Image (cartoon, rainbow, N blue to C red; front, side):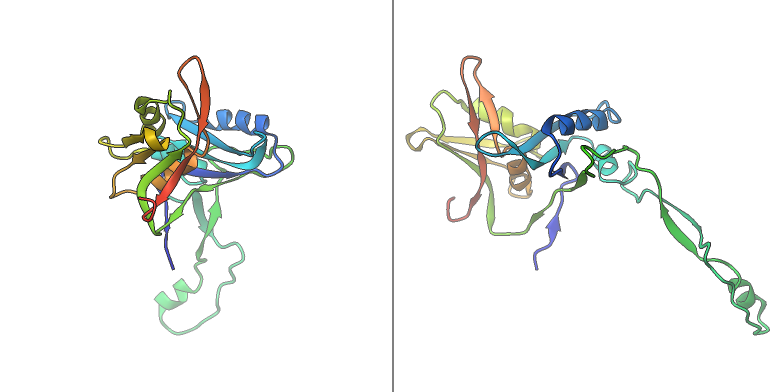
Length: 224
């Protein structure tokens, strides 16, 4: 079975039934706990531009990633350990004082602490915030954009994709005007393309006079 892969930056938000405006306001509030952290939000919408109850949040700092997903800023579990209040000491008489002493000591149990970033229910619904993940699978390190308008430049595509590259040498952009498409390639030693596709599901680009929505899809090896 393929293993889950996370990138410590991309978070999945499950919020079915929550109003889009309320979720966006909540995310601004969450990120106020990490004021120096750059972040990007991509919400799933249908062809009518209606919110579909899920989205992805990319955060630059790992500490923000950890806190948003319920951990401490260093990635450790946000818990404390206390003696088990339900422990009943064992009445043993072995003649060994060490054994008898151990039998009277309550074991420690794990107790969750309050989240470092509070997340109140929205519209009466608990929002699920979890690490986004991908599987090892038969894909390449590239994304493809189809139906590319002639006025969209390589630089526009680069600026849309570069925040999600873990290697400063990438992404590399290859535009094929005759096919009205572009390839966006990330480092082959990373899974950046997979995670970037979550954030670039529907990306609005503009030249100041006109705008369009680009859809970045992960390429298969056959497409490459």
